[in-house]
Image 1: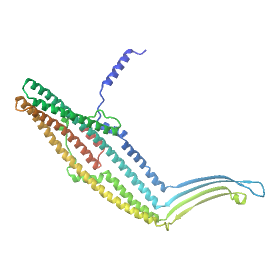
Image 2: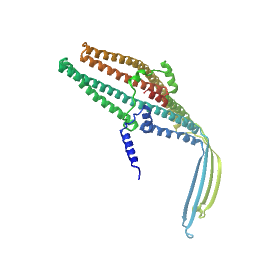
Image 3: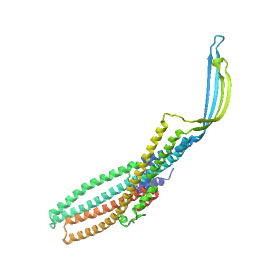
Length: 440
């Protein structure tokens, strides 16, 4: 029989586990969940794996093609000169073809290399997109949480002011106007709290769509840490970022591969004019050949090896049509490449401005928070000495809480702009996300 103390210890342990709150998830925790749970990223992973098969498929056109054929049948011959005769036809044919000169096959093989490289770039782009989607959803939740916390703090402060206004009115040291003012602010804050809670729930559901579970608690940063956070930028010149994007942006790389493939399509179409040369070999063993005519089948065995030359002379002008089509597609790919390059340059400049202006905005919001706190303290002191009224305190409190909310929102927007700028220059990866997570 087991020691009863074991049961007591087990029950106490279970009770402790049940009372322990769920651990808050960090940005990296959510990202690692998204790697396994996000359906969009899973689809891109499957597409990447499928694209890797382009290389062996392209190489197959350069390798031998071997076929084996076997036949077996009985022929029943009825003549007027005797009983029905049965001729057994049996045979095997083994044929092999080794391409020696097929320009089109060589081009297809080279295209397969570009197709695999393009798939690699697409998968990296999908990974960067996952980081951006996870980060945006995560920061949206944090912003909604910060807004709710501000509204709740404001509601608590206004509730205290409302109670004090009622007490002051009851003892005759304040008018009913102060009570009505505090009550109106309280009712407005209650409605704002409802909206803030709804926004938080909606943003959490958006994150749920990525990680396939409802995110109960997320790690957020404090106002004190935001105030002391470093605000840096590796390159201060906008054009340096643009030049870096032109070298490393994965969307641009994908479009460059598309242009290269279009160039190779032209060569492949022109290969329709070129002759082909194959090495062919065949082994044949047939039994019962010619039995239907002679009534007696014979056995034949043959072996052959040689070269097969095929020279296209006229194919209904289809080759010329395919060449014109490939040329037009190449021109389209060139224009798409130029458009992608310009678009990326624009996006890099926009994100650079978002980061630099975000730094300036955070500095301004820090100063606004400091001054609004000083204003709140002085207004409370002024009310105590009789030079400020209750509505002045309510206004100062609202301004202070709004400054806290705006600073948090500006900080999260700045971090998101940093991630987007890194993505535009092709440097966004898990290490960058770890750095951002460390700032939280």
